[in-house]
Image 1 (cartoon, rainbow, N blue to C red):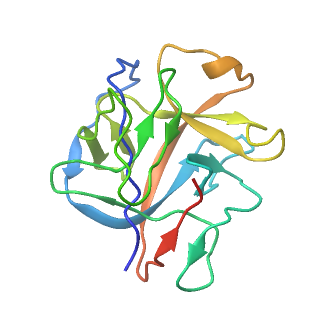
Image 2 (cartoon, rainbow, N blue to C red):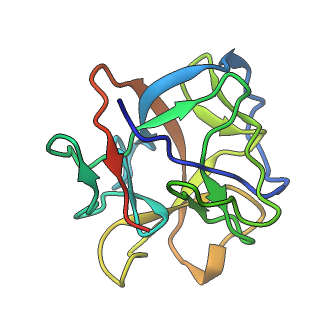
Length: 175
């Protein structure tokens, strides 16, 4: 069993480099890792902490049924819902338990394309360095018309590739 992480994205019209084609609208459980060759984040898996999503996070701080591998597990519903959210400038995060999604958040629109890349409508993701407590880790944002989301510098785009999890670990992530 695993915990569904609620991800809602406010309606942002981001630029897409290509149009994704749906592979399946019901997938799970899966982990996500970054594909960005010749970068510090290439093949880094996504972690969840403090209501945000990160790459190369030193410590996730989740409470899990088994020892945590330090990475978040996700599920995509048959309706294309992935339980995450994004703030006004596109920061991607999550809510836990019975929390409601933020105002103007959109739950539907997620898909995994034929390559296994995760998309929200026509938008992909970017990662910004040194963005949690002034330390390590790269915060994850929705790729939109913000070259420096929330003033972050050095952000780079990446393809969020999914990988099936054979034995998901149920975790409660920090908020």
